[in-house]
Image (cartoon, rainbow, N blue to C red):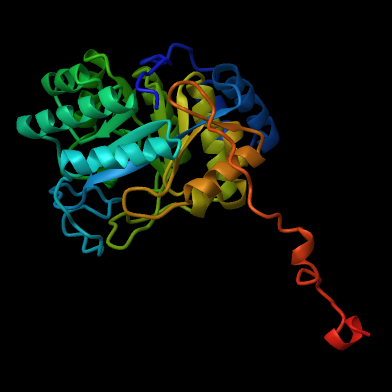
Length: 360
């Protein structure tokens, strides 16, 4: 098992946007044919990431007990969503989860904890865990732990953290509609702290929370202004207990257009299909990979998703290959028996002779 990270990644986006805000809006409102959007997005996706797809596996290391009131979240205070609450996992438990993720072919291990943000002792515990995973497993790690200042970011950077996730989620204009316990500015300040510490920023959106198309365009360009290198695009899942007043209708086509938009505004950034892929993209999940180069497998924070074999099959069926953290390719596992193998006939026939006729 390799214990080195031989593939260095940029921590900042370096390539300018390829569309204006008005052109971006025309992508979302249907003025530009979907095939044209995909063709242009794929050219950039292929230029920077070839035909590779990064699979991220998420580990919810602490669930619930959150004082924040983010309207989209099953863990928000007073949500009564029915999700199981539990305190932070031990270092050993998290390490074992990371080991399993590596063995399953994950490109990056994503640790997520609920709460406003970690105090100093918790930050030190997280740093110790990150150091062990990077040193012993040679694995890329992303942490999502809420609001942090530059001092805590420096501590995590010294431990080997290469990505810190803190989503802007929506535009500054729309943010008061989804949360009232902290501000958009506080989230932006966390990104600034992460940037100063030399950690790659992972920050994205949740679409479908009642925002306008203009809001989606605005946040795409705001992420560009921060030079965010990794952008997860979530599609709102209406979990029990959510507080989003007017969820948007998301069609598979619109979801693909949104991914094309984020690719063209942020050409060299990792664009990740995140939560809601299975329910919102549906039959266009594979098509979306012509704009995005990354996705989650094996579920999200509190909602199940497609399992790893199913995800890998979709990636390969679309002509892409799963990329490993060292730059290699996940070995192809021999497929099971084909649906159309001889033994499955005549059970597949719509109309078949009666048994007495077959034996005559």
